[in-house]
Length: 511
Image (cartoon, rainbow, N blue to C red; front, side):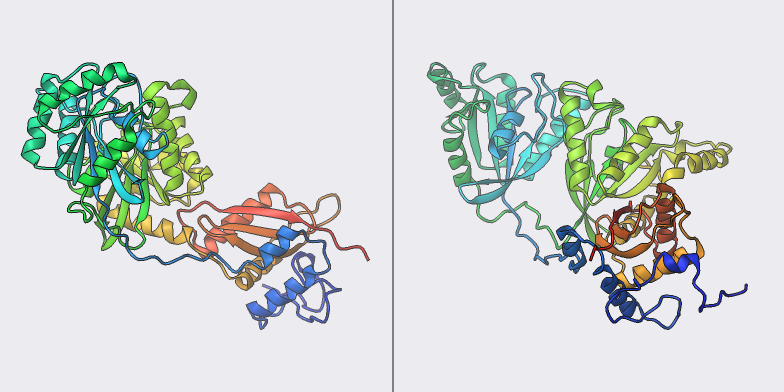
């Protein structure tokens, strides 16, 4: 291919070049021998001739994200909240935390999994575990909920046993007492729903359970919770026998998707145990469930979430609050695995969930679950359908898995690592501007109103996700920005992470 004469200016030369009035800098971008640092200094000098806002100057002086290295945290004592259904366990958890974290509804059986929260009282930090209601002689999903409550007791350092004081001790409560005695854990007896002095006499009858003094409280209004927590701190050991010390930098992975696509089954398969309740009923999971697991020689925190419904306003009660907590779990995660049911056509709901992850700025992996249910003749057609369905997120890694059998789940961690590596990637400013110089030389921006906007300078403002800011003399059309994004991905990778490109139009300073 014939090379243009470097002595003659080309339209692309005017798109990304040193301003002709720049002070004492004589560097052009046409020569291959100009290093990236010299290019960056030249372009920065050219910006001095333009009106820049204070935020522009702050951005240009930004040296990158500083990550504080912290040692592993010591294991915190574990305090489990147990009791039969609808005695106010989740309400008490929210009261202790001081915020509405656990899903609460005036119906029994809202909480199903054991859910851990970091908490603090009187300067002592501990892990608070909410559990589903424990019942005897139940079947189906209720039996699995009760099993999770029993696991929570076995893994706790102390237990808050919540009883409804307005009802008194029931046969189920006495069964829980036997369970607690077998476990041998310190127990603080909590008489809930004592909203006034008139109910305190009912709370006193709970002495008959043989667990010591009942602490009358109102989880709803906060009455008596301070004295109850003081007693709980006395029962909690200073050194946990069951808490887990978080190692340095476990990456947080949110498992998201519409209801009944296999998120809980995936978490159980990854953990290697029945960590969360799995049932054929859609919407089994209500609260996000965190679990620390070692995969590929690294620590990961996997978060099982409630299935995202079609629209939040179409849900009510527990499902509504579960949807809000799923969104919060996405925002607290670093990477999201969107599970899609391969046995069904991809829906608009699936696409919306993927967009929800992108809007949150999180790294992304798409996992087609239930692949083992696919007929061999169907798979080639499905591959073509997937390419069409994911045309807007071709940059996201895709894995075909079976959470039920564990088929190809080993491919999940490499996909997560690729996405997170791209999510953390920073391009040196000089290299970025050299890339843009080559890009506009090969494909200049189209003329707008007889003028061609000129790119003055570009920098990466942040990572997690990568965000780029381009200073230009005019507006860059959306199509050209998409072209820049596509070429960024082709050149630097950025597999599995959204990219944001913003343009700041600046005019030359008047003299």
